[in-house]
Length: 331
Image (cartoon, rainbow, N blue to C red; front, side):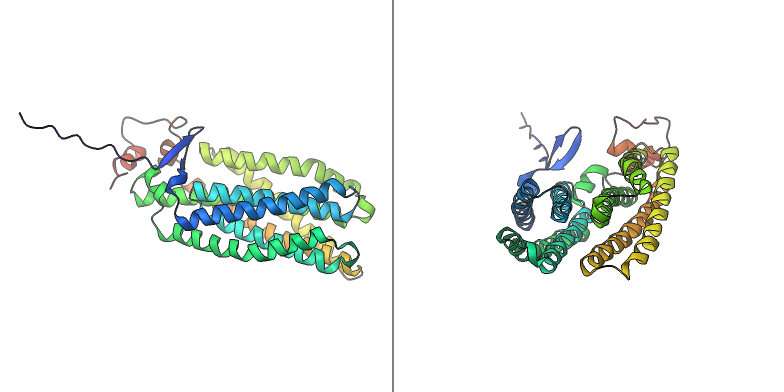
């Protein structure tokens, strides 16, 4: 009797969390482990010192608002590092690089321009950020480059070997990365606007914009994310309209801040310059998000939703684009 050979089961290189496939920690490369560990250590160290400043600094102080700004950016870095590595999102890794640069610039400028409020804790924070920040940046470049260089192992396992599906999947992931960065810049602009106000008072129009605009920004991000995931054109058009309105407000901020810049005191000039710089980045992100929205919408109905989110997609059994894509997932 011929011996029956058993075919070994393929090794699973991912785990499923809430229906989402992520890479196993054991599958990370050594440089990825170094990036995650160093990124978390540096972020947690800076976060601990920042929380101490938030707890001991009066809420009306400029230092409190700056510390809160640092706190928000550090939280975003932690998200970008973990989500970027375990989901193989190179653009989120690059966004983490930009955010690390923002944190470094903040710590340097804050320490250099605020001689009266320098402290040992601020000095330690500055040293930690300046020593570990460049290493984080170098490792993030390496991780992102490796993701771009390779075929995208996780993407390959998700959508198969079809180049068209891989390209659509990468476009979708780039779009989601820009969504997160756009929300981050909205929060940064909010904090800077609060900090630049005289004696922490805001005009009625600014109160309305902050009170209504910021929550709407969070809702808009959710609409954009769901619109792309569900391939809903109405939601995507609504999202793009809101992005256009945000871009118009950022341009308005340029004009308003520029008028104050010439006659401002040195420390206020730094704040106004920061608003203009953050606004420029935010405007570029909004333009990028709108452009990516158009590209994402062009991919609607081509089978990506049914593969990434099979519980939401409707499989057409009579033969359509989705069938042709699934037949070619392995080739």
